[in-house]
Length: 207
Image (cartoon, rainbow, N blue to C red; front, side, top):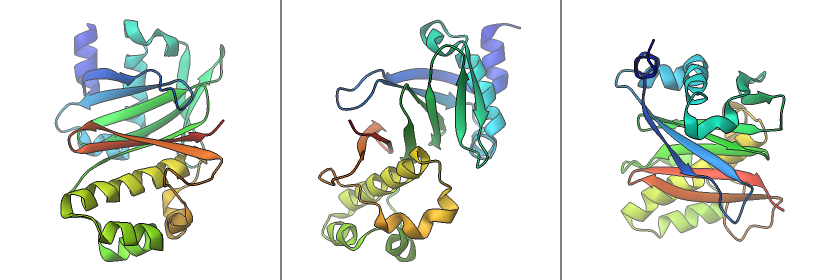
């Protein structure tokens, strides 16, 4: 079977390496994979498809550093990279018809979300945002408020992924997680837009 046909059957349309290194945190590779139309529901619900696509990515010439790794899953469904050569860590997220893999030699948490103009429900805001974050949000314009919501949400979900915690069990504790740039914490965050309407946040242990 040709590589192109194998990729098409897996639902993999195309991929790109977004960043290979940022000065402010450990070396990391973020791979953005476009999924074939109709595969969205499978990607969001099936870890099997994510692992299958990962096996195809390992065959690509510019991603040889993961060729000897195996993608597995922990007891709560958290992705784990198994490698005989070195310690590698992975975090996976899905947004806007794409699946994102963050790979690093240090523990890492990744979340990607689409920016929606509708915004979060007030009930969700009260559960997720601290009082300080709610105050900042209330004083922003509509467009900036929508971006800020995903800025806070992705950072907090990335924080949970870094620590291997299930979102459903910690939703009511998210308001206790401080994600501002000035926060004094053993973890750090980096957030950036990969598309006009898709925001990524990475959480990692500071040095």
